[in-house]
Image (cartoon, rainbow, N blue to C red; front, side, top):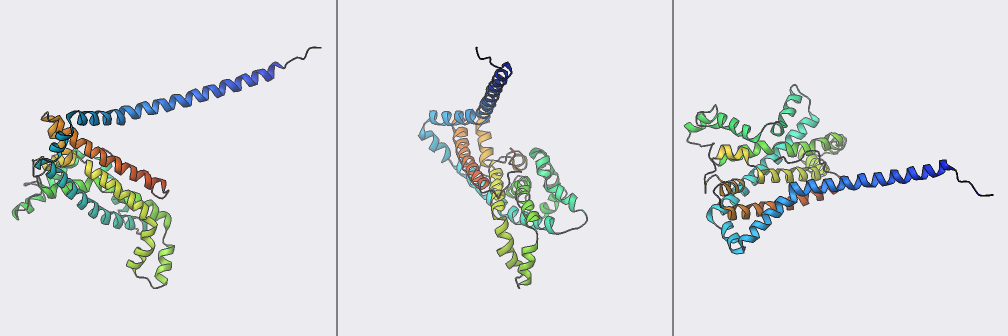
Length: 294
């Protein structure tokens, strides 16, 4: 007698194969879509910058970057970044410790205000600072009487950069401090350690990777900040023009060689910073919750 195959078993195998094929097709379509979207946003523009820079030649690249205006813009960007990182690192640690360990009225409101730079447009923030620190502003008029210029000068650019980069250090180390608790700090205090020794030997090691991650994000945002700095600086050549403002002005003046050369340098530094951030992320202690917004 001929053996009879059970149709039910064949149907199960066929459905299982179809399911695997559909899952694989869906997975590969998703991967292709992600790669295509990433290429459109990142790779193609970066390729265009590199292509235009190479097309102009190495001599023009070096000449564009070595001009007095370009060197001044990079130097000014470096100064603003260093000052912003130092101040916001110290302020961020203090605020994070206060938010994590202290209880007082208005704490939630103050903690929410730290996130204000994420919600407010940088251009709007720039106009806010003009109202406050302009020659006829609420605070600026007082400085004006002492011949101290804030707007369209370095102090205003630093203030704008401090504002847009304020949340990064705070938001990276605050969750770590809350999870860490105060048990080890209290134990160190019972052993005779003062507050500074407790912070240096107990608290700081626990937040070091989160702190480094926050500092790295602060550096990246400081280098790439455009809107707020443009409003408060006026983009004056050899005076208040940062690297990003230099790129914008050269592009609008149809000096594409200079614009693409400076853009390539900033893109290189952005790649280095991004690689360092990924290195910190793989350490497993720095959370990627808060990212730099352009």
